[in-house]
Amino acid sequence: MAIILNIETSTPVCSVALAENDNILALRESSEDKSHAGNLAVFIEEILNERKISVQDLDAVAIGKGPGSYTGLRIGVATAKGLAYGAKKPLIAVSTLETMVRFALQRIDKDKLPVPSNENTVLCPMVDARRMEVYMALFDSSAKRIENDSAVVIRSDTFSWLPELRSIVFFGSGASKCRDLVNRKNAYWIDGIYPSAAVMAARSYQLYQEDRFEDIAYFEPHYLKEFLTTTARKNPMLRTIK
Image (cartoon, one colour):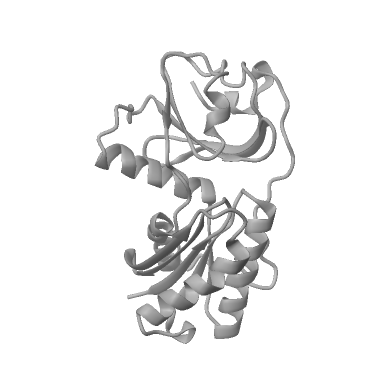
């Protein structure tokens, strides 16, 4: 049995979940703008008090490592590192975009959304960056990563390289930037997807079982600041999608 505190602050949603293995014991979330600094410590204290445990009772602390908001990531990572270091507990880092993919797949299955989920489906989580820029990656319908995280400027031809037989599903805080620019019949959007600590818990437990821990002293968030402005013809994602 593993009791893991999961923290996600890389987007406007401040999310904290306490899990036993991958079962959620308590959850606190808020989408209040610029509230992470005020809410995070309160949420952690409330959750621990609700379950009548202390930080010393935890087996690990897990943090959403980004990419995402610089300020949000800095607050979350500093808090997670402080808790883990002070209590001498291991630190686990989980990809923010991977958490979003797992949330989207849960929604597709649970809500029976009219969205394809097969071998020809490409899942594209997007976190809003600035102007027409997003942080994104590509995954298949089993949540296996196809392309690594990238910072991309959205253009009308950003996804024109993707073969027509492939469906692409957009979601996340940056996905709305594609609605008026992506012109393909097999493009889909799912609203309400964000990196929830409750969804993150399954992955953090898996990493815990595999002893995949971070070096607390040297761990840094995945800020992903460089932006790609290449045209579709030179898009680096063209390497593996067929």
